[in-house]
Length: 356
Ligand code: AMP
Picture 1 (cartoon, rainbow, N blue to C red):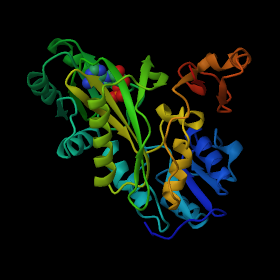
Picture 2: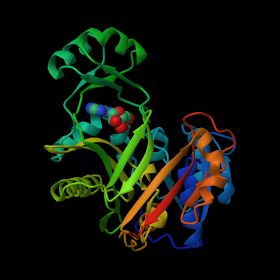
Picture 3: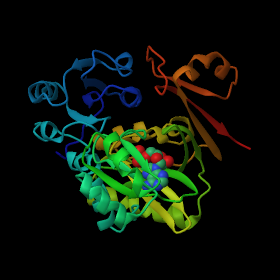
Picture 4: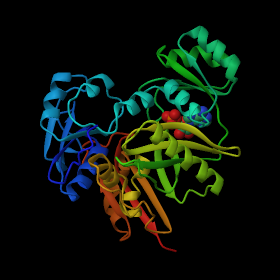
């Protein structure tokens, strides 16, 4: 991307219009930027807080090109977008689509992380039913079969307790290209959010302990209660990943904490749900630092603002209890302005800082 500073007062284009786009737009507005959204839906959570909403498909190069002409810089808040059209845009773009291409394919992502010294779970590429038998022989059982692309929140996955489950697992993934992953015996799951500025400055927030329910993030807590060695190893890998990818912006990495140290699970080349606590819980939020990084501004401090911070997602009907949540004067309530509270839908989150 061009190295020219994108100064406050200009317009940032965001590809994707969900809650991440909403919180990015709010952080950008605070710094004096306007945001324009490009998304396939007619509206979404980012619409209420951005200057403009352009409806278009992610693979529509003409529509994307026209959108790009109307903004000063493009970023994205959603990773399942085709890389080709983004690469063709004649406007500064951050993070570089190379990061998207790496993270969109579980096999590419694991190979990349292993090559730079990280430790993913043992895996094998599965492109056919015969491959799956060979992979089970190699990896053993229990194991998890995951589609290589477009999986999120535990979707596109099937567990194999034993080799005999192979037929059912393969069919449940609709015979899509996949990877078979060895089952990791972990103590807890955690994530690291890292930001890299245009000048190569790197900062990480404290690692986050994550608890999932039905494959969806339910609760994030900081500090994560990890050993110093684990924190150091995870932060070192985060630094290597963003340096190798010449990454600019915020990137999230999910790990399993095991006795033998952190095992890499997956990464997201964008702001991330497990970083929502940083809005009130850190000196500078993930959203603000993403905007600072992509615009070429100095990064803000990632230090924690309280000894302990907790962020709970409000899933489906949980958001309808906003009045009860607000009866606690210390609760920071965030609602995403989504209409229908479908089961499993992330409707908002609530953050609390603890000082004792
Ligand atoms: P993912 O979409 O890959 O993050 O997987 C969703 C959830 O499934 C994770 O948060 C873990 O709880 C669990 N999981 C995924 N991969 C593994 C693995 N290799 N071993 C054990 N549990 C896993």
